Length: 208
Image 1 (tube, rainbow, N blue to C red):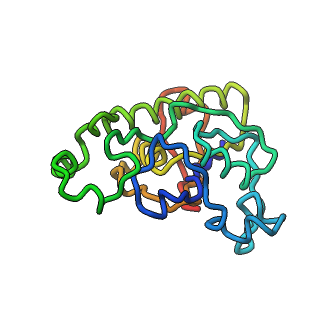
Image 2: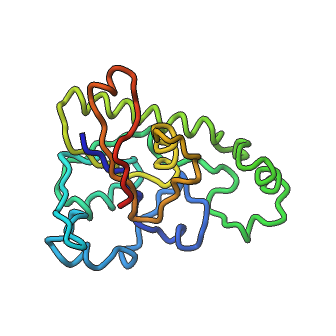
């Protein structure tokens, strides 16, 4: 099975480097590459630099608008399946704020000092967030394998992608290694039989 994990296009909060988790922002269409918006042969995230067009059988999305909008732009008319467990982290008191606005906040400094491992005040525990994302991915893969799907795209969030890639990378690279820009992501293969036998890892990982 071919799988792509793609981060949604940028929102205003992303451009301002804010913590945008549960906030349901729309994407900024001016941040979408022109070749995707205006060239029909390129709209499905493929025919670029001489590469063939790539079309998924369906697209799994976070319930938040920025992901559903991105999926429609990249894969117009494709069936979308919502996976609530793959939504972004709830940043609690930090939600909607950026580093400059949080500087001097003792709760923020305490979180920074923990290396980002402490739960966000009134928000989600980062480790529980990662587990949730991985659980959602596994649930979706079980459904896709049972449905005999062969090409699947996920349009989700940066933190979601990092969580999933960390969990199934055969080289066990750490969480922050998998940071990607808006509109970017990873392409990889999954051997269905190995996956069902419990040997769950990605093969032929390629950045897109």
